[in-house]
Amino acid sequence: MFKRKIYEKLLEWKKESDGRTALLIEGARRVGKSTVAEEFGKNEYESCIIIDFSIASKATRELFEDISDLNYFFLQLQLQYKVDLVERKSLIIFDEVQRCPLARQAIKHLVRDHRYDYIETGSLISIRKNVKDIVIPSEERKVNMYPMDYEEFLWAIGDDVTYPLIKKFFEAGRPLGQETNRKLLRQVRLYMLVGGMPQAVNEYIETNNFKKVDAVKRDIIGLYEDDFFKIDAAGRAATLFSAIPAQLNKNTSRYQVGNVLSKNTRSDDILNLVSEMKDSRTVLISYHANDPNAGISASKDLSRFKMFVCDTGLFVTMMFKDRDFTENEIYEKLLSDKLSTNLGYLYENVIAQMLAANGDELFYNTFYNLKSKHTYEVDFLIARKNKVCPLEIKSSGYKAHSSLDHFSEKYSARILNKYLIYTKDYSKDKDVICLPIYMTPFI
Image (cartoon, rainbow, N blue to C red; front, side, top):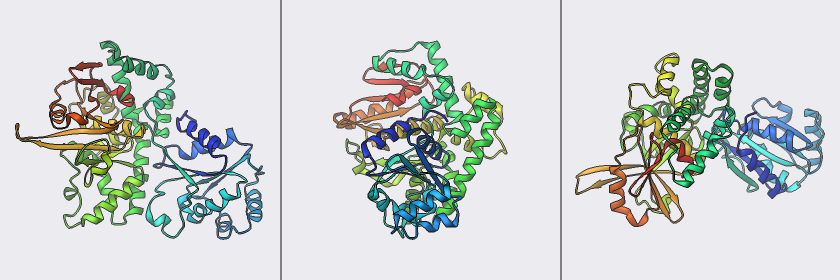
């Protein structure tokens, strides 16, 4: 198993909760939820029962129809799974719990009983049709799990040194040097191409073959598309998902749903679809902030948004989905930054992924300047302290930052720091902090 940061959160939960809450791990499919939960159960408890509801027997499912006699319930579980449960020293995992809503509802009574600890994992858990007929337990603590972030990716490829060193240079506000920057940019581009899905990372480590990595990613994309048909049998969610690279490449101020779906689609239907896709964790949604300030959420416009893929490695494969497979040559050119195409939207996606992994909600802002008679866009806005930090993303070393400059004129009192994210070394241009892309997680 790869080293994952969420493991520390599981340890904190076990210590702080002491069985008073269950832990619900939410995340997209194939991000490693089941693996980390199972590893945690084996390492931190005397015994562990894993109930995988995607394959659980009818007899197991029927146990949750009546849990009035918990002594009988636990006895049956031990018999069926051939595992001895030890009071306050055993963990029961409900894997793919969205497939058995009654099991999720039972958490309230199981936690109150306090004999054992409980972890739930699942995808598309928040989808209304999976929970509409049950009482959601208040005894749940939720934690989000994302694809492997950049540091976790470096750990996976055997590099425990680079990330802490980058952080030191960021905190000191010092450049790393041209040669080092080139090396680190190549490394972060490798992360962008492989992505953070554990299966894809493992395939890269074992084969060093981008074609085989691409095949793994295409399988995962196929699973996501199947899930979207469960959300919306008409295929609209799957269509919105597939169109993400094309929409970002247009560099428009919002996702233009009317160019993807029928223009007769009701706005309420669109909002519901987008909300359910966001809940699935397979996409990241950045909403327009109409009045950017420290409480950005209060000014978000649900009808104006941009959509990103939860994993940039998947995004790269979707960019070339018109082919049966993405050739190694394309990966090599992307890796060396020699592909003759605008990669701005690719860099936007990885920045969205890095910010989301840090726990930031995603927002952006567009505004019209009367003086220049031009519309400007700040790619991302994040809240820090009682102010906001605007981010402008460049896929090259180009240092112009007109959007940041005009945003500053308009909202100067609300800004903490301004960042230009680009492909050159750390520097400052007056009050603009110019960061190489790999320093984004430290903002």
